[in-house]
Image 1 (tube, rainbow, N blue to C red):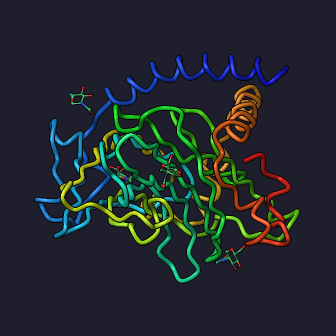
Image 2 (tube, rainbow, N blue to C red):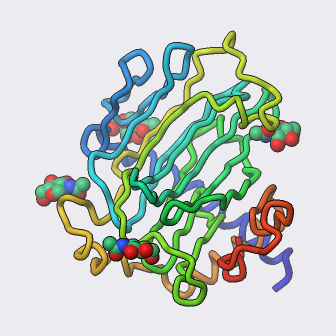
Length: 292
Ligand SMILES: *[C@@H]1O[C@H](CO)[C@@H](O)[C@H](O)[C@H]1NC(C)=O
Ligand SMILES: *[C@@H]1O[C@H](CO)[C@@H](O)[C@H](O)[C@H]1NC(C)=O
Ligand SMILES: *[C@@H]1O[C@H](CO)[C@@H](O)[C@H](O)[C@H]1NC(C)=O
Ligand SMILES: *[C@@H]1O[C@H](CO)[C@@H](O)[C@H](O)[C@H]1NC(C)=O
């Protein structure tokens, strides 16, 4: 099948997923069941029966929340509507981290931009303290106009990051082939945040956050879209043997996702650490196994 055929599939998929996304929003559930915040009330505002959170960034404070439990494997989604207008220097995130000394982490960082200029989605994966695996995706829609669904799917085999159910990145467990550690023995919390990243985020840090446009507000919802092996309800070893560790998509969906990754690599990939020869004269070993 040519790239054109794959594009047609992607467009059809996008249309189907827009319908699915609306379902995701409709299944709103109270923030407090799985999440908590330590941000003060003027920078973290719950509305719509606690199903929507507004994260407010101003000069007084950044904003954030975290899952109450830790998780080892599962599927973690969030509907996010990003800061509109001039968002240059703001960084909104949805990520998972083990908060440990040699930490595991899976990052989605949305880098704001000047009015009318496109957002970038930067992703990264840390395994046992080692990160430096940044990739940047140009989103194919305006992420400030509506909620879109962002997903981290984490099993023993792979970490897949999806945007509106389109796979944009897959980090495979290639420990046996390469010795590169995988994220499989440290539990992580899920976190959403909005903060000032103007030292590096917008136009490489050369354009700063314009506080005259504050407060900056990003909206998050879908707090029930969390399905994983939780700790302390379970132990590390029981999570490693749970359905969340081994759950994987059907071969048909996996083939579909591989096509999506090929299109994303061709059309939407802005930066890929795997091809950054200045930074990595020797290509990191896991790259040989990744499409994106
Ligand atoms: C607001 O709450 C209603 C009722 O629970 C829900 O159907 C709707 O999806 C919520 N809106 C958002 C944006 O989550
Ligand atoms: C967790 O995995 C890392 C990397 O594979 C390994 O170095 C470490 O010993 C493991 N820790 C435990 C407690 O199994
Ligand atoms: C902002 O927009 C400019 C111009 O299109 C682009 O070069 C840049 O990568 C965008 N994103 C960031 C975070 O600077
Ligand atoms: C832990 O177990 C309790 C009791 O079954 C359940 O209500 C709760 O939702 C569980 N926590 C998580 C994060 O799954």
